[in-house]
Image 1 (spheres, rainbow, N blue to C red):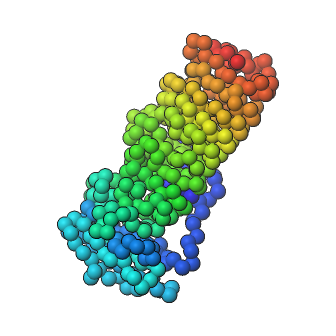
Image 2: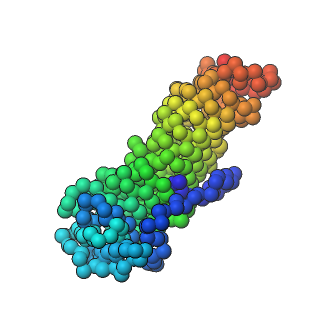
Image 3: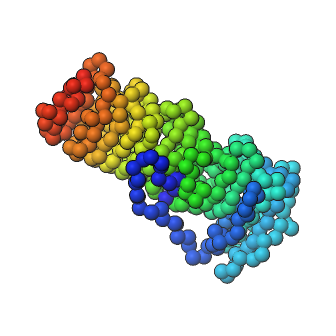
Length: 381
């Protein structure tokens, strides 16, 4: 479960299954029970797998006040934290993982109020440990504060092994998210207690920002991109309600293409302009619901292939203002209510614009209902 938000203001309440906390293995220490600081201090705990060949945890972009301590987890008990083994190399800190236990917890405190540099090679984790390679970090928990808005990088290019990272829970203060979360086995990710509400600038790379085989709930996030960040090809239910774009516009071209796992998308907004949906859902053979309530498609310039192979699609809301030809002929299971929602939301058609429907869909519409579309200049084909 990826959870980063709450119900958007001014949008009909959506109540999905409550985000499930991933149940950790019994053998793991409960690092979420460890105290995080208040105020403008930063502290992050990292759970490491000490059975791997990598013997050091390394962090870069540190300040002179950064303190790195480690505690071993033996026979169900976490030892006291000890920073005496911390090694300093300029702006980097290293600490050796113990050999006599399966797990250890590394604690990073930063007296300079920020522990991680805004640099693509110096993220929340770093490859710059002196043994090379990605580090066997399994779990992160804590609070990170920046004296000016800055970014958290959590991805394999910043040293996170995408084959091990399983859980993240962080409170970000005066910070945004950079480059996204690319850990394939990620089972739980909670930022700011699940509440962004427009506070966090989500400026991710647009290729893949979040990859999970679970659900994504990311409400009221804000992006400075003009193309929606990617969500991988295996997520199930995706709730991006309340999405805000700095320019007021965003494109969905290919963003969910060939996602064979996704079953629903909520993109309920307050007037966000969608500039293109070309191939947006092409190949989403299992998607049943696409809800774009509140989206403004009056400036959408391309719908080509958007709904190709959406054979399971039942519930569709395309927001308002669409003016260009849109092909829904592969959408064989659309309900009557969905068809009327689409028709009622159509804008005045551009020259020759067609709403292409399957024979089954057209058979659900009365002459008067078709006339609603033709009255706006549309041809129902």
